[in-house]
Image: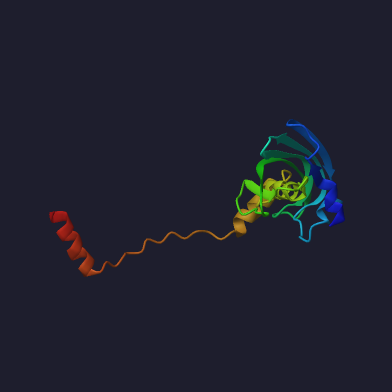
Length: 174
């Protein structure tokens, strides 16, 4: 947990206005979280832009880099470029609240905000659900198509309850 403190942005001594912070993220960053990643060898540059106002803070987190993914079809590893950004508004209140998607409330006497979870979420959202290597061959796609389940189109005659038919006739008369 102490290593997550490296991603604290202390805003208490900063002037009102815009500020920029940079981080370089690798596999050690993701090992700080107790989750399993779908990627390996991350090399990611992170830019955090803070716009400090008198009563709230605006954060914008941009990630740019590469991760290594495993193709769902061929099981080959390939590099995948990621680029994403998210923004969040931080306001001050009596208790911590992150129940809203784009707004976080922190204690009024806090002097720093930790952006590690924002960075983690930003990278996780950049990973595609379906991981297909750009180097996949036409032969692999043909084999996949050959053994994929085919949709069978059967037109079933719908049996309509005669009571509904009688009601439809009444509706058509009006």
